[in-house]
Image (cartoon, rainbow, N blue to C red; front, side, top):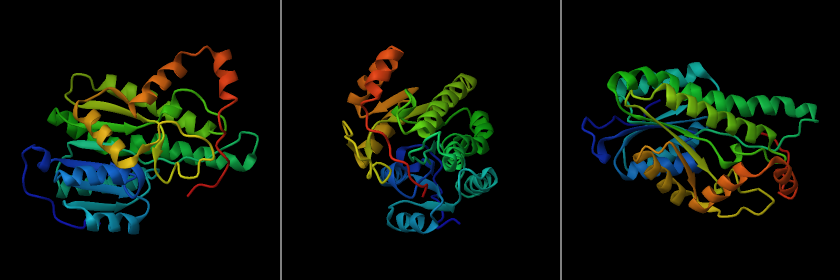
Length: 269
């Protein structure tokens, strides 16, 4: 479970913060872990791949606690959260980053369990991540709950019915949570990345405009978290694309979307 003991400092300069991140073994999660570790924050890192977590933790220049768990398993996530609370203390930032993406087609019966798995990870996994911390954060009157959604949640994209729908649900869930917690001191931040250079996008067979290096994306996300942004898109040019897509009349969007590259079907990792 935990790899190293946390710092005993309890003040809140950047190098004394506590950050809990899911999906931390690769991609955006690992990049965020590196970013906050460079600031000296104490980290809670959760992901399914325990060996990858341990390898990341071993090279981070900050105390870290590793938890091999699946965010779809509410009990496992709660157990990890309880351990982090007991050993490191109340986190200042909780980042629900874990997510899966795979092409799906409704007409294919074998894709039905894939739809279920995508929603369990991308939506319920976010709820499972936040739930163990909310009451304590509200009682303390501080903290950030951060959900990593996607620009893909703004409009439905061909071949990505499960992914787009799950990210749209995540955006709506985070908005509801933000309003519920208004006035408590706990800020809810929705991050909607566009194309980020990670293993998730590495095999996309279509153009990816404004593709952003993952460590640069992590820095942009951290700045949005720091200022308590309600909703932030990165990279910034994608924000204009997202706004335009959202405003397009449905007939025009349908014609344009038919020209988009379709995410190929595949199997979940």
